[in-house]
Amino acid sequence: MTTTISILIIVIAIAGLVFRGQRVKRLGLKKLPIECLDKSKHCLIDIRDFITSHNEPVKGAENIPLSYLKRSTKDKAICNRMVVLITDNQRAARSAARIMKKHSHTTGGCYYTMI
Image (cartoon, rainbow, N blue to C red; front, side, top):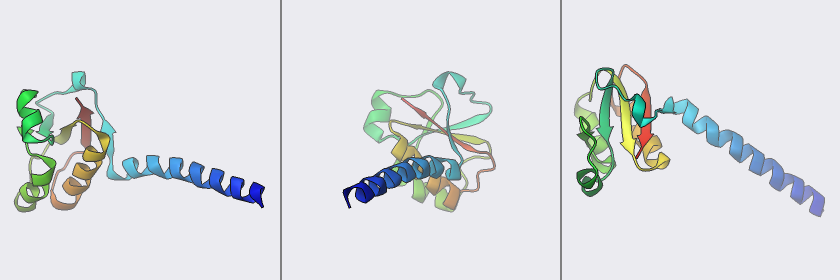
């Protein structure tokens, strides 16, 4: 009885690790180092809150906090280039990529960089 429970827990843990990686791949979200940012190829969107982005600004980035992103992308497309989301955690990047995919008409992929 305890061995079957142990095996079941191990199988669930392995499945969780496998599907966790799949969630990021489905959104087409890829990590991009900050050194590789090219403003001519990418639209930089800072999804951090106003205070953080004001204290640690990224030159050339448009500040649209995550809480305002759905509202901002509903009416118009943000840009026609590849989008780079500037964030401080991966969970916010996934949420933003999901919103961008659903409401925006971006032609390129979606990347994120963590600061």
